Every structure is written in C-alpha cells, then in structure tokens.
Image (cartoon, rainbow, N blue to C red; front, side):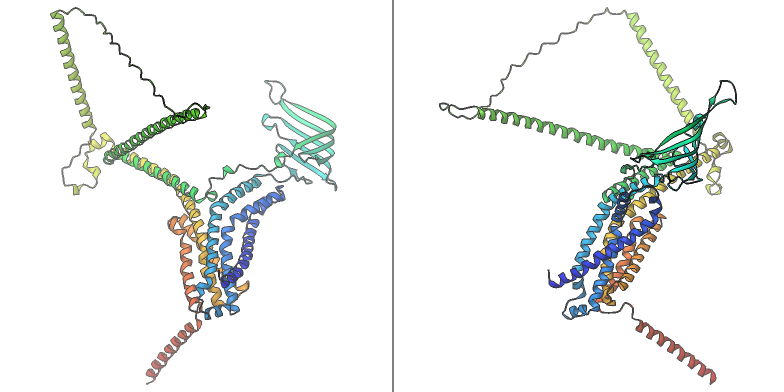
Length: 616
C-alpha cells in the first residue's frame, strides 16, 4: 500500500466512525419517541430497556452505513480540495478515480458488512426486539394506588382509598370490592376505617393491614324453590390482613418462535423459501378455480378430464420411476453392506491369527482361509398326488337338461344386457338438448333462441345457466379474497428480500455521489457535507417508500420496484463523477444567465424593428 493510500484511509476512517454513530443515534431517537409510551410505567428495569435499545440499534445498522459513507466521503474530498491537496495530487498526474480507489475498497468492505448485517444480525435482532416489545405492551402498569380513585390493577378486585397520609403507608376510608366469584353470583365487599399498606421484603406480595371494618358477603339462595331470597353475611373485624400476589405485574418473556415466521425476521434463504411457498399457494388457488370452471361447462369438461388423465399418468410414471430408483438404491446398499461385513470378518480373522504367540520352532505362514464345506443338496420328495373321487357318469337325459338350462340362461342374460343398453341410450338422448334451427344462424338473437320453448321449459335453461354462472362467480370472488392477502404478503417478502441487496449496494453508489460533490464544492467540516448527505439520503428513502407503495398497490412488480431507487441514483452518481473529473461545476449559472440575456435582447430587437415599421 502506498503512502497516499494510507493517508486517505486514515482521513476517511475517523469521519466514517463518527458519522456512523451520529446517524445511529439520530435514527435511534426516532425509535425512542415512537415506543416511549410502551416502556414507561410498565416496571421495566434499566437492563431490559437497554436490551431493547440495543436490539433496535442493530436493526438500524444497514440504514446508518450509507449515511456514514456519504458524509465521510464529502468531508474527506472537501477537506482535500479546501487545503489544495487535491489540486496538488492532480498536478502530479493522479486522477480523481485513483484518489477515490482506497475509499472505494473500504466502501466495498462496508457493502459486504451491510449485507451480512441485513442477512444475519438484523433478523435475530428484530426477533428479539419484537418479542421484548410485545412483553412490555401486554404487561400491566406498575401498581399505583391514589386517593379517591377506583383502582383495578389487581385482577378481580377494585380498591378505593379515601385518604393517604404523607408516609404513603397509612390509609383511611378503604373499600375493597371482591369480584373473583362474580360468575357464581357471590358478591363480597370489605370496608375499613384505617389501615396500612406495604410490600413484603421480597417484593412478591402487597399487604393491606385493615383495622376497624366490616366484611359483607351475599351468597346463593337460602332455600331451593324460593325466589328472591339469598344469604347475606356481615362480619365485623378489628384487624384484617389482605394479601395480594404481585406476580401478575412481573414481565413474562414470550417465546421467540411466535414471531419467527414474520418476513422481517427471515434471512435471504428463508425469504426465498417463503416466497416459493406463497407462489405455490397462489397457484393452487388458481388451479382450483380452473378446475371448477372446467367442470361447470361441458365443452371444457372433456378437455379438463383429458388433461387431468394425462397429468395423472405423468405423475404415476414419475412415482414409478422414483420407486424403481429407491429399490435399486436399497439393493446396492445391501450389496455394499454384505461386502463390508465380509471384509470385516476376514480382517478380524487375520488380526486373531497375527495375535497368536509364535514358537521359535514354528514357521510363520500365511493365513489360510478355510472354505465352507459344500453340503450335498437335499433330494426333493415327490409331491403326493391328491386322489380325486371319481363320480359316476350322469345319464344322457340329465346332461341334455343341464345344457338346455345353460343355453336359456345365456339367452336371458343377453336380452337383459340389450334392454339395459337401449334404456341407457334412451336416457342419454332424452338428456341431450334438441335444437331447432329453421333459419340462418345470423337471424337468431342469441344462442338461447336456437332451442324450442318445449326444450327450454323441460330443462329450465335460464335457471340452470344463472345457477352455474352464480356458482362460478361466487367461487371466483372467494378465491380472489384468498389470493389478495397472499399477493400482498408476497410483495412484502420480495421487497424485504431485495432491500438487503439495495441497502448494501447503495454504499458504493453514495461514495460516487459524495466524493465528486466534495471535490467540486471544496468545502470540508460538518456543515456542508451534512446538508448534502441529508438531501441525498432523504431522496433515497422517499424513492424507496414511493416505489414500495407502488408495488403494494400492484402498479409495478415488486422485483422491479425495489431496484428503482438505486437505478435513479446511479445516473446521478455518474453525472457528478464525470463533472468532477473534468473540473466542472454542478450547474454553470453564468452560461444559463448569458443565454437568457441573449434571448431577451433578441426579443427586444424584434420589438424595436416592428415598432419602426409601424411608424414608417
């Protein structure tokens, strides 16, 4: 690495880190203002609040990185231009692109880190953030008993305190309504002149030590069969200790699997799988409607049945092929297992023989593998022939009688088949509409008029047609209602998927916007670069939101809309870079003003000529 590259990297890293944390803090403040109501007054500890802020800050990393690249590139190039370092580099024959090269390498590294954050860190952070925020939102507020207010913090109890002393412990004129057994028709109320309230040492229970009061309780009916007579109990007490469990005020951690299927909690691979499953679901809805329409109309029914038969045959063929491959695979696995088992037995025998102690007199010999002895094949015993009982031959008359009976049965069955076939044909002919075309087809108003009135009445054509059309319409509307949310969900999944790529690539695009702007303007510091960064980043965010709305309203395909903000910024970066390379201003106002002045002078000369002609 050359000295100039090291110098530029050092100049770039400092502002980049500073602006990154500033941008992260600004974006985080927006989150705090939005969700402050959900966190305050719920008894959440500092650790839990800090954990939620940390998770949200991780999810904002892909947003903060492009801002940091944009601001730091404008600052570095502006400082180089302001101190005439850029001019000296150009006079030494170093082009602007060569000066930007080390920053470009750094921006490419930031691009990969941004994609890694979007694909790996952000889904995990979003999942934890949503689950913790849900815990806070569903959590009851902390216990707060005020004077003259009916408090319902404890489930099944309503507490009213008349007066509370300055020590926040002594209480007077206390009323407690117990509604725990309200469904069973049991009503209970406690009144007390004075008392004390405090938390136990472990903060698990809230105690109200009441003094000089009464307990009123109305219960079930006194006797069966009697109406409007209930038991009523009144108890006077000198001291009553009422204990409440504060466990319902503790924050319960929700299982993260509850939110894990949301599209903001998915990685690129998971989003691809989710989009694929949504497409399959939409395809199944469309095929269901297609099947219903084809079954409703007779001309399409034959085609539908033929197509379905063809599809079923193809599916069956594929299944048979897969089953055959599976069987062959299993056979090969069995053969390999047998070979392996034989090899293992041979190696085991060899190891045993090698392990035996060899005497000095004995000679080492190669192990002999004993072949199994062939046993003589067993002779098959001849099957014993079953002895059939030989019946006596029938007489000639009996044989003739049996043959005649068989012939008569065959003739009768043939006649029954012929009659059934004729009846079926007659029914089919009767079920077919008969058209009466006694004039050219052009002279009929509608296809319905080609059938005579008798046929129209017999088949009730209008009602059947209306019923069929109504059924198809209802089915189409129902499927459209089901497909609508699926299409919206698909658009959101696609937008989140490609946003992981666009937010990463915009880091490089912002470098080619910020660096030329700094070189052209030649002003460093935080003021001017910050203004330029805000303008271009706002432009990117506004375009992103605009095209997202267009995709959600199905004006543009989601796959196209998500890339449009980047495609708008790329020509801007190209124009700025080319103008910076040629040392031109962003807008040459002198050129435009001179053209406007020339146009005004030309118009004035024309007016003077016309007025001179009128005078003559």
